[in-house]
Amino acid sequence: MLVSLHVKNLALITETEVHFKEGLNILSGETGAGKSIIIGSINLALGAKADKDLIRNGAEYALVELVFQAEDEEMLDALKALEIPVEDDGLVIIQRRIQPNRSTFKICGETAVQKQIKAVSALLIDIHGQHENQSLLYKKNHMEILDAFAGEALLQVKEALSADYNAYMQMKRELGGLNTDEGERAKELSLAEFEYNEIEEAALREGEDEELEALYRKMSNSRQIVEAAGRAYQLTGNAEQSAADMVGHAVRDLRSVEGYDEKAKALADELENIDVLLNDFNRGIAEYISDMEFDAQAFADTEERLNTLNRLKLKYGGSIARVTAYQAELAGKIEKLQNADAYKAELEERLAGKQAELETLCAKASDIRSKEAKRLEKEMTDALTDLNFLDVQYEIQVRGQQELSASGYDDVEFMISTNPGEPLKSLGNVASGGELSRIMLALKTVLASRDKIPTMIFDEIDAGISGKTAWKVSEKLGRISRSHQVICITHLPQIAAMADTHFMIAKQVIDNATVTDINKMSESQTVDELARMLGSDELTDTVRENARELIRSAKAKKQEF
Image 1 (cartoon, rainbow, N blue to C red):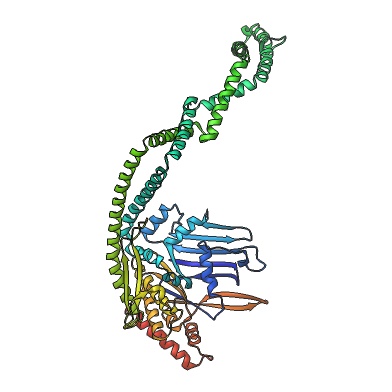
Image 2: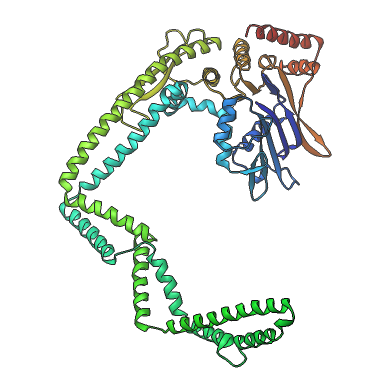
C-alpha cells in the first residue's frame, strides 16, 4: 500500500506530507484548492512528464517522494525479479527530484531510470484519472481489457501466438523478396557471389589483424627501437666504463677481502650473480639488435595485408569474426538464389504450415476470449446493477476469423444498453459522462478482484453523477477498499461519507504567497466538510446533523461488506 506522500516546492505546495491508511482514503476540498496537484505529484513520482514551471516560484528544485509498503511475498518476489531494491521492512521509497534542466529518480536511495519506475508502479499502484474514461470509447482498447480479465488463462497462448506471428511475417517478407524478376535475381546473385569470393580470396584468420598490427608497429618504429637498444647495449657492456666493467671491478674488490668477513663473502657472491645476469642481458640485447634489421619487402607485404583486412572489416562488419559470419550468410543467400524456385516452393510449404499453426493458436485464443467474455459480461452486469443501472444489458462481442495479428484474429467490442427497449450499442456511442464513469468503475471493480495491485487511485470517478447513483458509487468504492487501499478525490458528500480516513486539501495565503496544504481531518472537521459538500452556505446544526446522518448511513452500509 501507499504509506506516504511527501511533496516539496511543487506548484502551490511549499512542503507537505500525507500519511495514507488502509481502506478508503478520501481527499476533498474547494474547487481550485489544488486537488489535482496531489494526484499530479504522485504521477510525477511515477514517471509523468515534468515541466520546469512546476517548480515553486523562487525554489531551486521540486521534490516528490512516495513510500510504499510491500508485504505480500509474491509482490516482494516480483520486485526482486525486477532487481528493485527494497528496505528490510518491505518499504519501497520512490523519489523524484525536478530541477530546471534535469530530473532524477531514485528507488530506496539508488539512482533509477524511468523504465524501472514504470515497471515498479505497474506492480504497486493503479491510477485512474478523469481522462481514462474516454479510453472506453475506443474499440481497440476493448480486447486489451478482456485479455487483462482473462489473465493467466490467455497469457501463455498469447506469448506463443506472438512468437509464431513474428516468424510467420518473417517468412512472408522473405517470400516477397523471392518474387522478383529474373533480371533482378541475377543482379542480386552476381553481387552476392562477388562479395563471397572477395572474402574467400582473403583467406581470413581470426586474430590475424591484431598480430599484423603489432608487427607493423614494430617495423614502423624499428629505427627508434634499434637506437634505444644500441644505447642500452653500450651502457651495459660494450663501452668504456660500462655497467659490466664497473660491476666486474666491484666483484674483484670484494673477493680480495672475503676471507676476513663472511658478510663480505656473501655480498661478493650476490654481486657476482648480478655480473652474470648483466652479461647474459648484454648478449641477449646484442642478438635482439641483429634480428632487428629492417626488411623493406616484409614491411610492404605486412602493410598491404593490413590494408586488405581493414578494407574488408570496414566493408563487411568491423571485425574478422563479423566478416566471416557475413560470408556464411552470403553462402546461404547464394544457395537460395541459385535454387530460387525450389527454395520458394519449400518456403511456401513452410509458410502454409506456420499459418496453420498460427490459425490454431488464434482459434485457441478466440475460444478462451469467448468463454472469458461470458464471465466478464456476467460480472459487469452485476457490477453495473450495483451502480444503479436498473435495466442494463452488457454484452462482449468476440468476432473471430478477422485479419491475423500478433494478438490473434479476434475483433472485440463492448456493447451496452442502459434503458429498457434500447438496442445494444457500442460503448463508443455512450454519450453520458456519468454513465462512462460508472462503467469504468465497474470494470475497475471486476478487474480488481483478479489483480494483485494493492493501491488504487480514483481522480473524481464521480464526475456527472449525483443522488442515489452517488450512493451506489460510494458503496462500490467501499467494497473495493475492503481488499485494496483506495485513494479517491471527490466532490460528493455521499462518497466522502464512506471514508475510513478523510483528508482536506485547502488553499490559503501566507506572507502574500498562495499555498496549498493537505491535512487529515478529525471527526468534527469531517462533519463540517460534509456539510460544506452538501451545499450549505452556513454550517447550521441542521446541516451538520444531515452530514452526521450521511456518516451513520455509510457506517451501516460498511457492516454489510
